[in-house]
Image 1 (spheres, helix red, strand yellow):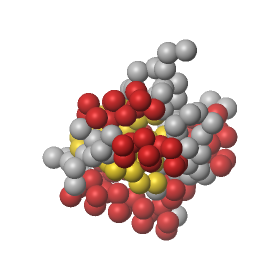
Image 2: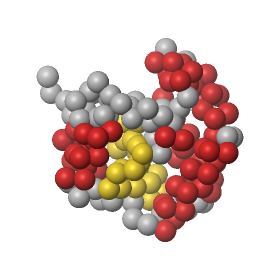
Image 3: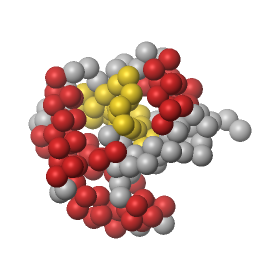
Image 4: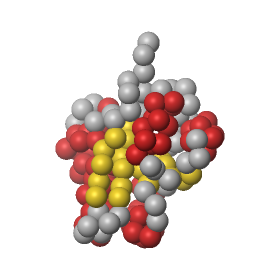
Length: 153
């Protein structure tokens, strides 16, 4: 049975995200942010790649599965239905469809992967929509939403 994990790094330290990934047996972290940048230490693309690879976990950035700018703005404003509508329309693009098909094949044929984005609560993040779409393609897909320990101030 194929397995998919998702995780959001909001409020977490990189070490806690890595610990959650390792505990779950994740082989590859799939960064599904349109812009793999962050003001949060350790979560900009290069630092994130280095951090997870040091823990023996692969890293891949799938920009085409990120939320467009207007969807990110809607999410920041708490307009989750608008974000969902915008992201669903984005998934109809050729680039997103190609990336989603490739990801589905990777999940079907390989060890567990984990989708990463900012939002801690998967219900308010586009990665939940991606998990739904992947579940439509891989009917026996088992999805787990990970919660890293919150960072201690």
